[in-house]
Length: 96
Image (tube, rainbow, N blue to C red; front, side):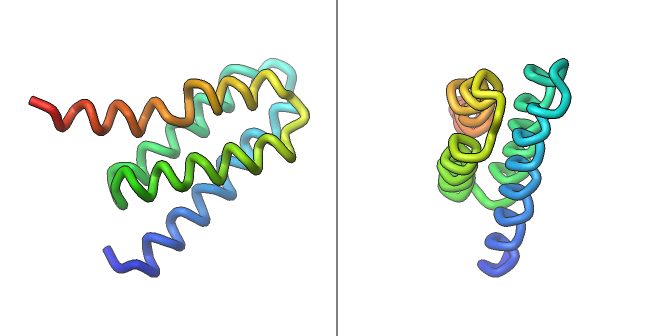
């Protein structure tokens, strides 16, 4: 994958993750579901571009969600678990 394609993929996934985390303020029942869905999007970046790009994306989305998310519980669930878990799991699956 070319570098420009990697940047574009990370930008689109960052926007989608941020929108999903922002939507937790609109739907109260989605406090658990939408951060998990945002974490699921991180899997695609980890697989397609690699763990270094995925970790950079995780940091960017975490900072944006800290600023923009009205539901701080959902933001903390993404930052503490759902954001970095797919990257860590992807790395651990490589170990034999």
